[in-house]
Image (cartoon, rainbow, N blue to C red; front, side, top):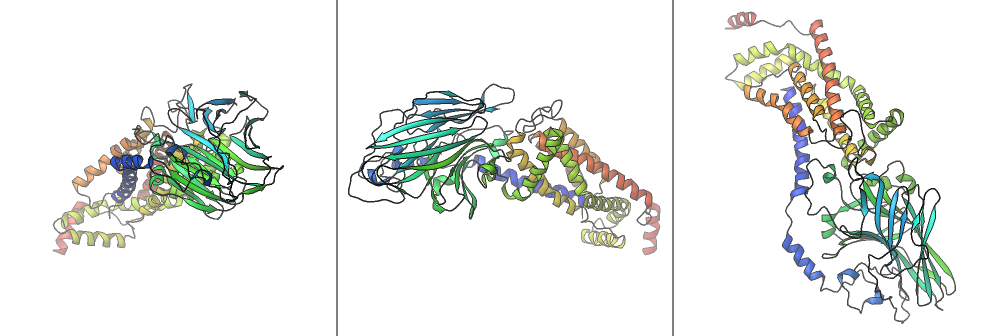
Length: 583
């Protein structure tokens, strides 16, 4: 068996499959006529399932469809009233500046409608920052409210504040928003820490209506899909990352729906302790963690809306006696997927860093990479040291691989003789070649196992470098100033190509015809072209691994050739004499 050929074929098939999957995701054709038809039907259809009982008799438009039902309605025969709003959904009543965030809150619903991440430039060395939430070009907002049969405080109601704009430096502050209705007052308080991406949210109801009321807390995140019609660069790592909604509880774990799935599948399920919801994208997300031990989680797609994609939770109703108060608490997280901070916010929140099927390998790799970074202070050198450690872990396997290849290399003259002898009888040639391997105790598959084991590590590290915001725009040395972007001068792909060419010269190619040999010689070029589009951090790992492997293989090959562990190699003259004897 051609050891070297099979190794490359395994790698190419695996990477080719990944490229095919991503191509289908990026360029699959959607049925635009179906979407348009759904949009037209949506604006004329009554929406009952996500509308509170208080307004069922009122015609509902697409913009009102995201008001949920109360979870524990009490029918007392009264006709509830939802406050009419004349304010624009984009009217800003408070802007909050912290060292980490710029936040803006709207009058309608007291919702968070703008979030700028001041520590994360959109592009390296540029002044413009990542804007996670916006109410203008890319609608995206987080809302909360209370619904019941007697009274409702929804995200359509108008809030006011006496504070105006706030600037926080070191000390946490509160932003207090209020609204009144039918003798009840809702005070919505955002507790903002200038050194954190966490926001504590409290909704306090003061019931002076003269009757007992029952209210359910609901909180929701909704947005459009700005990537739907976009054509990102092939080198944009974010195009391969998950974008959609996620939800979690301790019993069921983390589940996701991407934007396409949200159009076809509607979630409505009860989740237990530790539940939370999130709107997720590459590197960043918005999450809401309820205080309640049980919530109902729902998703919704509303074609034609400015905010077509929605995820919410609704908590069980609380009974509030007349003259008393009650609180509904939650925690919001608006920012980057910082893996060392997220578990302290809520259990499982770090799962928003989506490593896919290789999570079991990727998470330990990132943990080790982060520990090394804490020691050396540079993510590039951390990758270098991680590569060396991985190489040491696989040292014995690689040694077995290279010993097998070195022995096969010594057998090449004899295999060539067999090939010339049985050039018109391929089955016979393969039979004799395997017999020779068996006689010399050489395993032609000995080199496959190490590479098969290392492929999952390679792919897992690929996802670590793709998904870890900690490595976003991280510099290394000299020309590599962003490990999450391709090498601008293609030096690392070139180093890898040179190492592959040298490795080929040390590797045996038994039974390979001239055409196959030409294909194998083209492999380093093909890999270099492919790696030219990969993140520099990943190519740094692979190029260094190739160089270390080349060095190890060269040493082992020279050692075995010197030791003469195989039978003496026959010369062509000796082979001819042997042929004559057999004849």
